[in-house]
Amino acid sequence: MFFGRIIGTCVGFFTLGPVGAGIGFVVGMLLDRGIAKTKEQENLSPEQKNELGQAFFEALFPILGKLAKADGRISEEEITSTERTMTQMGLTSEQRQTAIELFNQGSESNFDMAASLAQFNAKCAQNNSLKQIFLIYLISLAYADGTLHPSEETILRDIASHLGYSKFAFNHLLGMLKAQTRFYRGKQEQGGYHSGDHQRAPSNADDRATAYTALGVNEGINDVDLKKAYRRLMSEYHPDKLEGRGVPQDMVKLATERSQEIQAAYELIKKHRKAQG
Image (cartoon, rainbow, N blue to C red; front, side):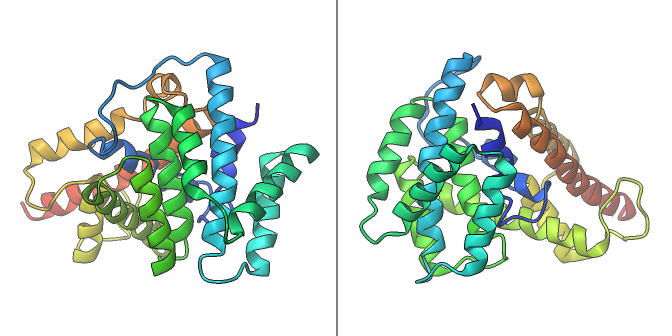
């Protein structure tokens, strides 16, 4: 089954690269489980993972089509990028045709998104991590250019509601995702935030504010609680934990890469606090 490739590359035509493809993944795990408070399924069988992968695929592409059409038209760039994504995913001819059909269905005005999400919810059952990943990717795709259009946000809020997110939980997730994106873009533009890298002084207030938001904490947090929050976040990257939740190995790799960004945010904060004495 192609679940791993779907998760690992489906965002390629909107995101900022391999690390950017993982933007927000851990943010969703950090969120205080703003969806149904049920025990998460762990240690899924290969058959269960394949079934979830199929459900993810069948829900993702039509909603991508709906988001692409949100501003009134689908651009040539979006079409080209979608085709490139399918190539990167390594889809067979049959799978590719199915993906195109689903994308086109989603772009039609009569697409029943509620029904599609209901089917996805039914397949996911208690697998809240997969629901989080699904919503996070859609937000990341829509916000990858640094702008979230009102029509896109309306669709995303509707999706979040169907997945069981409260308005507060969605706003919290969206804010953290935006901070993650800004932090990543800043890293790329400034040549990177590396541990031990003294070329970039951790004195910029905007950078620090973004780093705090990326970690899901406020600037008034004490050092002990900051470290605890950081460790809780990083613990979500443990390969066994991720795979036990049904996350494929390709996504585990991306999540591990993303952990480097979280570490960079933490190091930026630590440097500033140390400099302040």
